Image (cartoon, rainbow, N blue to C red; front, top):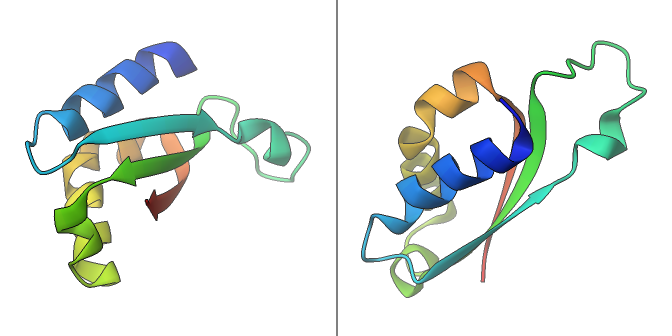
Length: 86
C-alpha cells in the first residue's frame, strides 16, 4: 500500500462520522527513514482533525476513538500516529 491509498482509506473512515468536519493527513515517514528498525512498509503519519465534539472530549477518549477507527491500518500500515485536534 502506498501513502495515497492509505490517506484515502484513513480520511474516508474518519469523515464517515458526522462529528468530524475535516481531516488532513501528512506523511512524516521521511523523518524516520534512517532510524534502526524502520520498516519502509509502515508509515509515520500526522492527522489534523477538526471536530468540536472531539476537542471537547478528554484527550484520552478522543485518541481512543480515532485509534479504534483505524485499528486495521494501525496493525498493518501505520507505525506511528500523531493526532492533533484543531
